[in-house]
Length: 316
Image 1 (cartoon, one colour):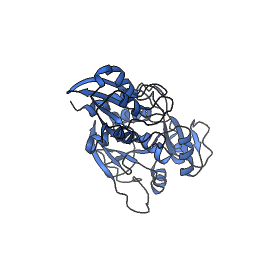
Image 2: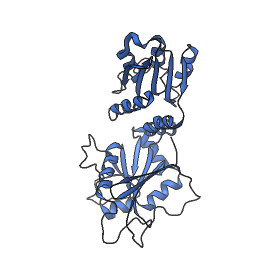
Image 3: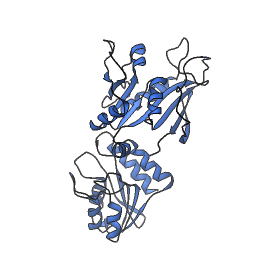
Image 4: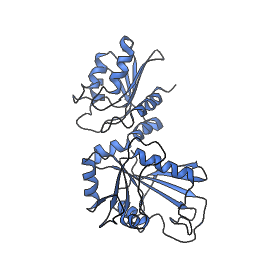
């Protein structure tokens, strides 16, 4: 068993209940045996490391802690986790991602100063630990939401298909509703709002809550469009949303809005559903950009009859 991978799995159990805190998982191992595990369950309650230590009891002494995020070194709504790890006699700590929050960072240094061996994971597992909290990392470091641009296109790169409302298949559309349910906010541009009258709700996926549903652009909105209008400069609007604890934004608008976000450097991730269809004409993914944009972590997977392309503009 890869114990950091297990910690990443545990962290997901806190998804939806820890915000504005990140999800975090922790595993304690001694002599190759898992002796305790835990995850951050709710804001204001014990962190993952403390829950794992409680589960391990005396077996924590001399163990190795695998934790997805650097143990905090400050006193907030809970005591500092780094000190709890030291007091429990843990011998080694393996951290998935460093904490960029200046109010909480420094746990690795505190552990090392106390004689605890501490290391930061690299490679794929390190990336997965950062990816798991990519929205929170962006919210903390850039004071804006992590922006994902989601779009469906034909094989010849068109965003509309004559005679059809949908480009992508049913499985892809279900995944989009799951993405909405997992996002703090979903947004389109004014053109999409006026032409398509979208609701932007997460439907048919048992969403525990609905995202905030936004329109970026100049009003007024049609009377039958029940969306929140954001008319200021994009940078300012994203800063305001961050102040309201919006950490993740799913962008669903057309090429005009996507181009505006891209030219402002505000798209972090692309999700492109490619359908096995040819349109022959119609709008393309983006309008004119100031310069080429290099993408990272390019990946593909099949979703029903479609192919989902994933790539990062800003890798976590």
